Image (cartoon, rainbow, N blue to C red; front, side, top):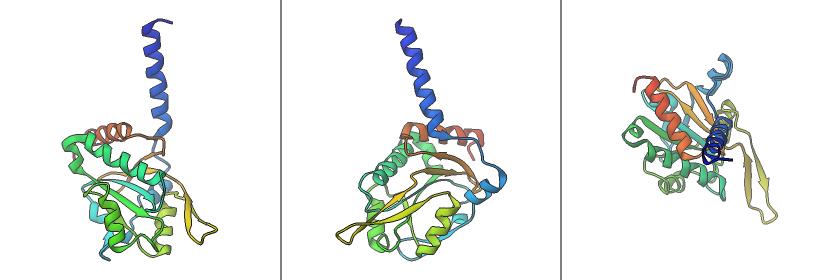
Length: 196
């Protein structure tokens, strides 16, 4: 196999990985409506934050919890790294972390957790029912796993969602996606919308 063939093969593998990791095909109208369904949750200060507050911004949303050992911090780090890779266009994007563990992730604790990643990252929670409703609207499944020492963890879906400036669902990135994939897709979507 020549060097040129090897390079072409590598490009094809990377392209295949990218296409598997990101689903840019919009779902049917009812599923899209649910994914962009308006929500009202609370920030660490107790202030109600509505999805409509972000109109005019692109939004990246990740659902997880602060006591997550590796998956959640990895995904949040990739999301923030994507913003860094976007350069000046990142100012058009609002990253959001929605906790699936609002009983532990609240107040100063949630505020300190999101600050570990970036000062642009907003942490949101609410009552367990509020969080469960919003998570369900995004197809996020989670289950509390009790441990023998009385503590608990969660098994949960790990996806990053992009909403456009009107709050409509655009893309889901799986946990296999890296910052470069996210940044590239964000830049493409912003460009397609004419930079608005």
